[in-house]
Image (cartoon, rainbow, N blue to C red):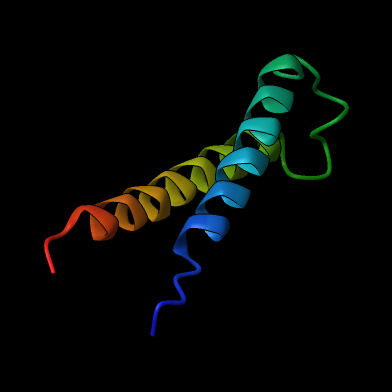
Length: 69
């Protein structure tokens, strides 16, 4: 089958990961914002994990397209 959903999923996770990472970096010193999450900057950490996962999916998608048939 020619259907490969790794590229759109990777792109979506990479974009959302960048948005959350930037938000986490801008709210780094806000203690009252992260009081409910035990003072863990959840936006930064979830954004970084999403960015890594999205980048991995994009890498795998591009690598598969360049593979010889």
